[in-house]
Amino acid sequence: MPTPEVASALECTLHTANDAANWLSGQAHERGETSRKALQGFAYLDLKERGLSAQPALHVLRKVADAYSTLKANIRAGNLGKPGSKRRRKAEAKPITFRGDAAQPYDDRCLSWQVDEQTVSIWTTSGRIRGVRFACSEQARKLLAEHRKGESDLAHRDGMWFLIATCEVPEAERYEPDGFIGVDLGIANIATTSTGYRAAGRGLDRHRKRQLGLRAKLQKKRTESAKRLLKARARKEARHAANVNHIISKKIVTEAERTSKGVALEDLGGIRQRVRLRKPQRVTLHSWAFAQLGQFLEYKARRAGVPLVYVDPAYTSQQCAECHHIEKANRVDQAHFICRGCGVVAHADRNASHVIAYRGETVWIAGRESRVPAPHNGVSGRRSQSSSQLGVTSRPGPLGLGSS
Image (tube, rainbow, N blue to C red; front, side, top):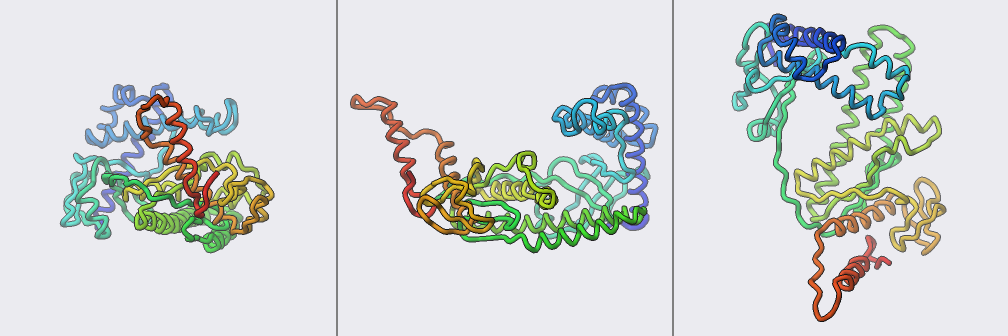
């Protein structure tokens, strides 16, 4: 919450740091030297002459080096296309550039927090400024007081100033789960659990379709103001989706913690590359933030000590949760499941969530250390292990029926 004078100093600081980063990026690209050590060797004194103190100059060096490391990693992974492709040539042909108001990292030498007074002391190109007030929730204030560690980022966005702090929160000790809650992620229903909770995707889908129509109108105008509005709408949509994912993940983890169960998720990595859809469905799939929902579930589970496992997603929509019969014809349509083996009728997503819960138990058991007793009375170790494995596979299935 800076005053106009402080905001002016902060803005000047960001522009100075990013102008220096752009200059350094050009030098690094021209020389072909992008490591931190190489950059510090030839550019450290020049950065200080550009108005940066010692620590901010080092942060600019690291920011540029990290940007080039990320670029090289994306090239190696093929994220920018094959060698010789237009996108890859464009990325390699020019130096990396930074926006004038791009975020700048601060460490404890350049930024000190007075959490109880809710003020900070921050370095700027105009000198050290003390007593700058900040606002946050009571929960965030406690996190800052107890767990803040490492660097913070100064960011300027939509006319507002933010300090993005890193907090290292200790993980709770994981308990031994009494079963698992299976979570089936989808588009029609964002998440369906084996306990009966279902987060419908209609509201989020309507919101995205409305935003898609507004974006199309703005894109036709091709004016600078339209481009600014497009960026603002993209951020607004991302915040809305993140809020929905936070609500869903919190409900699932809270239910698991209350019932002493674990959470089982499908491993959906690479689904965009594997799945082939018709053109009208591609926008829905690629705007589906399932990876973010999975990340939210994972970190909330770790903070609460809830065991979380990932299972193989193959045939979860075609497998019966009661008899475990797998057949493509079992999935009648998006919402209905009718098993051709035992005749059970169920909601397709609910059935899939029970299958995931069953697989989660199997994965958890397989991951535990063996508790097979030592062989005795002439019984071989292999025979004992086989008996133990038979005992594991005959435990009840997700709907109370014995598994084969």
